Image (cartoon, rainbow, N blue to C red):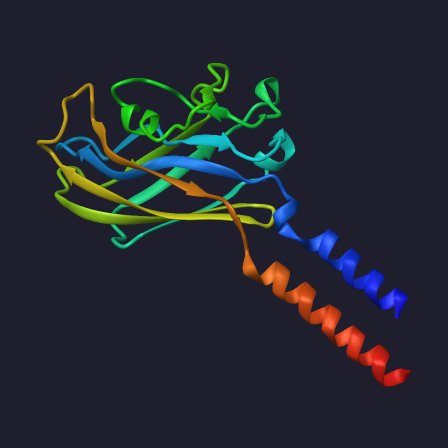
Length: 206
């Protein structure tokens, strides 16, 4: 019985995602994009990463895997995500990303007391939005960011029109959102199921 209890405790300690340092993302929720004739794509800084409950290491953040899907095949989005060990690990309250007001004012509005941008992190996370020249319309971008067992999922409204913005300011962040990386339910469920099965098997043998 003692060994069974010890096994359960070790299982929870090993696989419990709640123990992993989590983080928040501050990213666009609604974006206006200039799409004139002769231009088939625009790029800009994408978002900020905020360390919220413990050190966030370079190794963990650099392992991020992105899935980007739009509801219109004519519009595709790519991302580059290059954290640097020169400004990591991130401590609680550290924020990584490019700050360029008024472009990032909507991001700033979502910062909490004590959270401060690290200027060394600068332009490490960018996106490239590809579209047919002159495209007019609205598209939803669904993004999943996976870091180990932590998952961040959010939607961004992309509105495109040749009349939006100016030739030098082609993207405007109308609204931002703050989302938290959370553990995938499967990790806890699988561990719990295995523990229950092993306990039942041991009980049957005894």
